[in-house]
Image 1: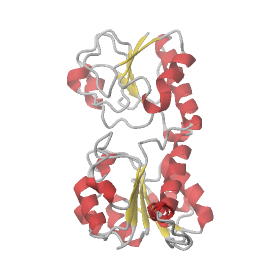
Image 2: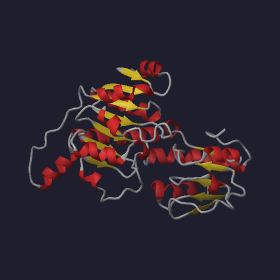
Image 3: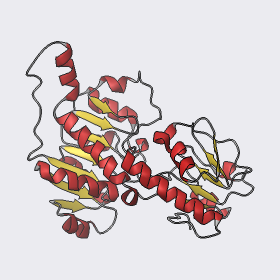
Image 4: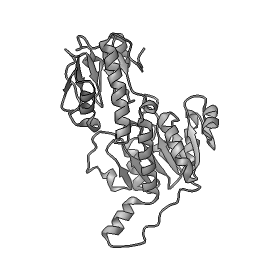
Length: 316
């Protein structure tokens, strides 16, 4: 089969090289960037971070599957794919090891902000010892917006720190709260209550039309003064100008970002002059998660070639 990888050869933690090794019988073609001009001649598309529009899908003449090498499908026109008879599948975070890997970066960002990693780097540069003083996590409240695979993995890792854990879930939050042992759980309409109670707010929910721009001037103003924001999901959940304003005024103490309003972000963006700890969208890029994702994608390629139903189809 001919498979189009809509990115450069080394993108996504070297995924292309790994999947080529796993299924060498197939022909893989990289576009050289997060783009695709035509789908003619391809059996499978791996979109990565490329927007997949109806117009692009209509260029396909034999495409059977859009297979994401991860969970995020917000850039794919699902309705158009369904209309054209093209399956769209992803790899769930909790079955691949991805959620565990993302949660580890989440803990890293929380600790880095609490202990003022930027300030420590400045002290070492200035040959100052014993400063800055950090913030202990014990007794702080962490609010997790989204209690799917990543949110649950965060809870497991944060509990030993002695924090209070609260969360939001799209449906049946009371049951989720009991199962996860949360101090409080609410639904989407209770976001402002969670924001007002949390010292750290962790975004681990999907992005769609209802969650795009979730963190904006109004919702930032509902956060506790001096709180921190951690975004492990998608950059579009956060309005960039509102984030910079909240950081520059000191209302928000800092932000930990693995995802951005544009990717790659401009390294000279003034938002990075604020107390921001940033990682280059690598939260899910570990040996554990990559091996799990490669195995899942390889299985769906095998199924497509054999004329079988692919797993984790999301647009039917």
